[in-house]
Amino acid sequence: MTGAMHEGSSAAEQKLNAENTVIVVGGGVAGIGAACALADAGFRVTLVERRGYLGGRASSYFHPGTSETIDNCQHVLFGCCTNLIDLYRKLGVEDRIFWDRRMTLIEPGGRRSVLEPVKLPAPLHGLPGILRARCFSVADKAALLWAMGQMMMRRQKTGISLLAWLKAHGQTEGARKRFWELVIASALNANLDQIEVGYAQKVIRELFLNSAEAGEMGMSRVPLSDLYEGVREYLEMRRGRLLTGYNVRAAAWDESARRWTVQCDEQKFEAEQMVLALPFEAMAKLLPQMPECEGAEELRARLKWLTHWPICSVHLWFDREITELDHAVLLDGDVHWMYHKSRWQPMRTDEGSYVELVISASREFAALSREEAIRRATQQLGEYFPAVKTARVVKSALVKEVRATFGVPPGIDAIRPGAISPWPQCFLAGDWVQTGWPATMEGAVRSGYLAAEALCGSLGETRKILAADLPSAGLMKLLP
Image (cartoon, rainbow, N blue to C red; front, side, top):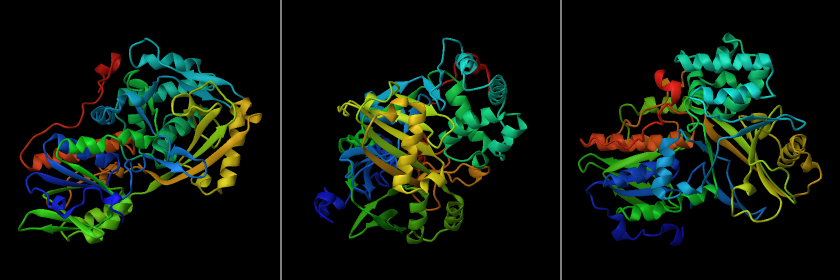
């Protein structure tokens, strides 16, 4: 490894002050959240990431085939993502988010329906949009309103799939295919029979019922990795540091010294406390190199139960503008979402359109070749936007994130571990840890903040780090 990859790795720097030292393993969103929160709490933090950049699955990279910087997948946030927004504020990048309250649903042939809140008290703010939506029949609308009313009034029983719940609550085929399969199943990135109904209810309440502000959608105006540019300075200003290009191979616990030693290829780092902020596959790989202890085998069994679902994204650059829309939901095809990134990313200065098409929870699409996937996506895009048929594709790219999100099937909450690990002075973070949220950037940041809270609590300091949920508005304030 080069010296550039090991900035700040002299022998003197490796010998950390034993007082209040923490090493955070993993520079994804969860690890960034944990590191920043602990630095704020006064700990001397070392954040270690094996890659040369931060963000994990929510990052961007230079694509040599197109000479463009692209995201590994389009990531969105919502107004209800209070902890992710809190992290962006810490890093000073909250102004790099483009916000929109409109959701345009387009049928093949181009007919549009717009879901947009109006000035009515929640949950009535979204009602006119559903009633006016031409993509739903009268029966579809009645079914949707009935289901939303049930999810609004009471917490649904856990342990059953969303598909079983929909069948029991009279959902029409149109409501199922054009709303539940597309909007909800793609948001949770899994098939209907593989979604715990409680997580679907959370999406419904947060995005459509609690308040107009909660459902507002945000997208980064810059490549995702640019959002983390300030992490290094943030930590250094608080006596911490960021080390990229270090692959953690093992971790050893010294009981007499009460401290951890982390082996990174050829170098070692020591700290009193440790946060493991890794994807669950990476955590499972590290487990054999962790000390044996009571509870480690149970964690290993939990990790084996977890699964990932893929997300594919097709990036297309056209020689002319193909639509005036900033983004859209595409009905009845393989492609679920269209993001017109050249409209809200000022770095995209060329004439024409740069769009990212997202295909969620489709293992069939993920199995296609690059050429077939791009051909199919482009052809289908032309069914929604006629200008595509006369535009020229200047360049294209396909990104397959086969481990995009972990699944949330019935029973998942009994599997997800908490922030406290089986080892002493060691804590867990990652979107798969128990946060009450599905696999989202918000869930990842929450896990990092919860790990930081647990670490502080283990030292006898009660510190509230987790940001408060966005309060319900209107009539929703009266409901549980």
